[in-house]
Amino acid sequence: MQNARQRVASKAQEDEFVTLLELAKEDKTVHNLQWTASPRVGFYLEDQIDDILRDCCSPESKSILSINTTFNVGNFCLTSTINQRRYQIKKTRKPANLPGPAMLHISKTGNDFLYFTHTLLECSYELERIAFNGGDRDKAQASFLKPLKGCTFLPCNMWNMTS
Image: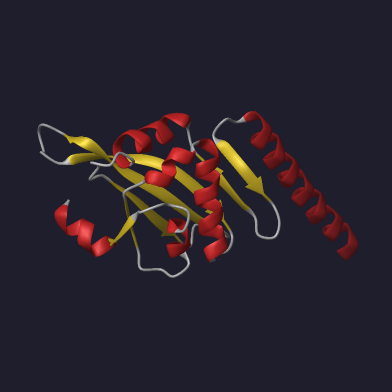
């Protein structure tokens, strides 16, 4: 009986793996699926990359690309980004916050965040010019900044006070 349960569980895992691989081939938002050593995958639309390039990468940019990792979403973590529009909303006089690229991952190491940055850079190396990054003072998350040339890190409590 136990062997039968193991075969069913193994078959379910194989089916999930095949489904994920098929999704990675067919869905244009799935990027750089990595199964080993630690499962992780990036998600973004090219329009989101264009928004970041327009609003966060020019020398005069004051827009912030923020990064946030959510835990307890199941057996994985979700790291999402938000970037501020350069222009303000007339009614509120505050910049609009646009959802950006995201990453699903199992572990939370510096290599995971470095992988995320490199996944984005594969789409456009101009993202190296992101001027400001906001986030937690997390040691692992700091690896997101390594490939970004001249990017200034703003701890989340600094930029949350101004928005």
